[in-house]
Length: 380
Image 1 (spheres, rainbow, N blue to C red):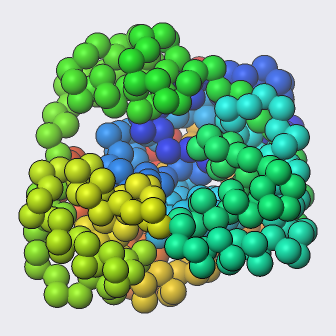
Image 2: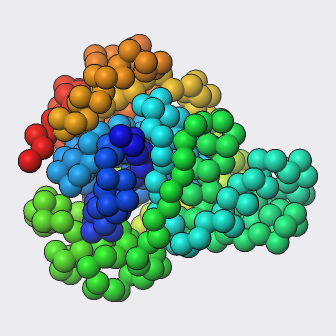
Image 3: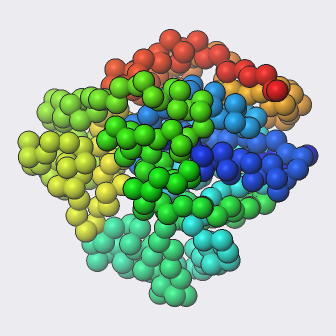
């Protein structure tokens, strides 16, 4: 049996994700699927419109066997850190194949870039040279690749794939890789095709447009009656006003803290604030993550205390997933979280705080969080 790992956000779960699961089951006839899933906020720092428990439920109902949480402290980070910890968690559960989506069908170029970044000793020197010119870190990486081999990777899913492959190489994991090409344009916010991006669906939801054809029925039934007037910007604005020192929060440089204070009164939304702060050196996504770290009080000091994975948290499983977990439980080298103990685990203490914030901003999941009971779904 093949043990397949996928890293997901499901914001929200849609037909493209269902297509990926069906393709895996078609390609790998005898397989078990484990997903490592971000919880209340996404890698870019955005609020998840499906809470972690609804995401877990619909994932298992649509063919996933086990859902594992990627804690906030690793999920709202740059792509390399996001990949490092998600692949590490999946490796701990003994996956043998990592499957990911890409914009390109042939990933030879991505593999060559991964080799260049991990094996070429000149690469880091070129990155530093470009950073010294005052450009953003992603731009410095891109320019360094062109310096050493005329490589170029631009699309977000290909860049994430690169991070996954590098992590497998760097950590010497015995994990095969397999990509499934996306069937839609991630830029397209207007398409009414059955398979569109999560961004497209969120745009439809925000503009009160029909999205029933783009998501499975169980997802639509959850989202159709939800109110999406979350208070993200209001809470963020209050947080910025109430803080004298923003520099203690992760990703906040001294220059950025000045710009945040300068533009908070001139902005009417989180998106507008990010665009006002954005510079040549700081990308939209980095600023979005940084603002989320401020909102969730995630400091540089805390980040330094959670460099090592403290536990594995299983959010849900079906019968096949339960049987697999029982078969490997004696070989899992990291504690599987059974008791919700925020005093024992710093990562969990932060996760609880983030869940409290999410619950006040958007949807109350505090009781489910503290009960810490995995969702169990019977297979048909």
